[in-house]
Length: 123
Image 1 (tube, helix red, strand yellow):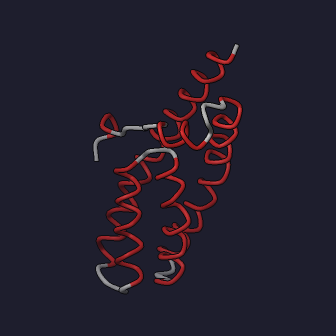
Image 2 (cartoon, one colour):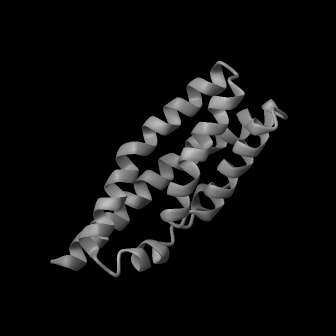
């Protein structure tokens, strides 16, 4: 997945928030605050090859990506979760996770930009 192709579509969040900018910013802040911890748990689970923890961590990350409208990354997390729950294709899990580490750096930057845009609109 090319980082330039990462699309963040906040239309679902906008709908849930009923266009409430303050709520949208709060949700982005929560995502930016919590997701690194989830990724760290996923990393630890992969390092210890704990199938159940890998599946649980991917499962926690997946809906937040959907909520932020980052469909491509949500699909990758779903794939990691599925492989882990079936206890198969560990190499693919590692490969996808390594790709996602770079993707998340871009996601965090782009969400921070979206947040600044929202804050600028609100003033």
